[in-house]
Image 1 (cartoon, rainbow, N blue to C red):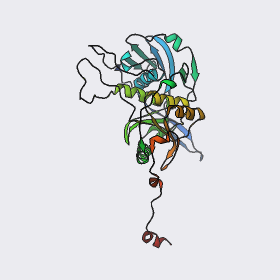
Image 2: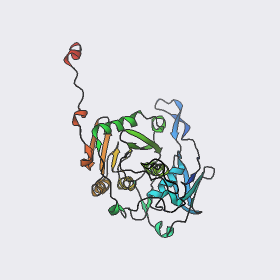
Image 3: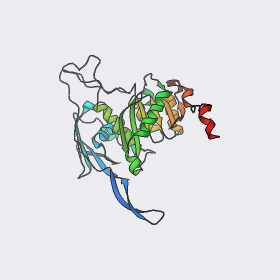
Length: 313
């Protein structure tokens, strides 16, 4: 897989200019409950966003619209249409016309050919990916990484405590990026593919500072590495979710849900650690168990001393 690095040269381009378009995430509706009572509840907003690349219509996404510019950037990244964040000059989102205008620096080579073939995915809202789904799998080399069982429990607990749109209105998926137990970013959308694409865009817009401190004059920051990161999703681990995580260089994925057969096959091929059914202190590791440092004693319910149980008899 081609690495996403900044072009070389004495004058380095800057990160893309992004608008900060905002739209309500929920919408109030009147419902009738099982007792015949009328009340108002909040439901997730859903709106179309048509992406135009250099004035050429590319695709329309159905989205919550929380961070649309990062969604568009991550979509282009995960569709393998751009190699680097520095290929993009600007992304402008206008909710009045439900459009995102992407301006590239040098165009996208063979864009007609590369977007001619579509695969309809299992994602919410019937997402699609361009080209062969498995085209780049053989070229992806995931870095060595480990996650302890204690860190896994920390991740699950951090998500449990997070204030979310799901808690107030339901009907959305959430995805997050962790470094150990530290929550770096959390995204919700009507489809989990939108959420992971938004995280991919966030990673590109938050490059890492070199070990020496600030980047040298005329050089760009290093793109954020996924090597020490963990991707979390509330949705199931399908093949395309596994592939997108691997494209981001993230070798460990955690899901509150389960995993599909093709997702399992791809994860095994990549050596990716896929953990599912992760709630409270329960989980199953579907693949890449060598990356998980087990601490089974943490899964045991604490033993109540006899002195504390005597009065309960």
